[in-house]
Length: 242
Image 1: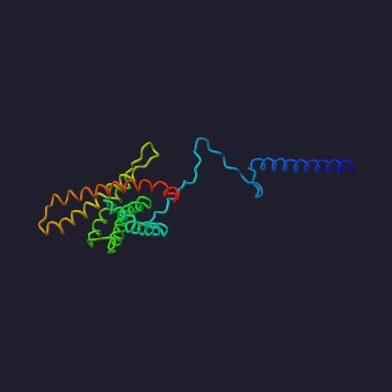
Image 2: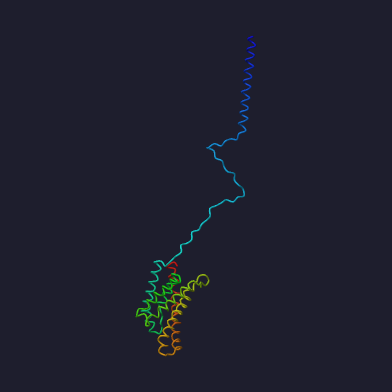
């Protein structure tokens, strides 16, 4: 009887052990089918897509600030050159006039100022107006007010011509020479026409003779001013780094 009880207990123990193993196998099977959860400490790397170009931020280039007006340095340079032209006309110009030549240093100096500063057309007109007002000094002008329109138009021509490239071989710039010559012709031509109209036509004088006399003076002045400005423009540009 005791032996039967022991056999029955052994069978129940074996059955219990079998159930536990079956449960463990079932648990293992169910666990293996579940995907592995990613922990917070482990980061996933996105797969690299082949053939897709890398997107980069658009490249921006800052545009240079546009200059609205003349700088203080430019204004000082214009004032100094106009003052120098007035002094030269009063001293050297008077001396050369006694020898038959009549150079106008004020025209040469405002042409030089416009060529170096390179202002806008409107700013060139202002420089011409200032030059015309300087010429109203009694010792610098025998005919009042005529220099205002003549210097305005001369400065206008100079302001337009500075935009025309006139380089030879990429190094020699003939713009100061040609520009000053043409600008002096414009200024001198306007002054001559107004002067002839006021002083000759009103008195019944010979118009052609007066114009011929003025033409020789204007051409001589234009040639002198052109050479002077061409000689001065090159070293001044280097010194002022223009």
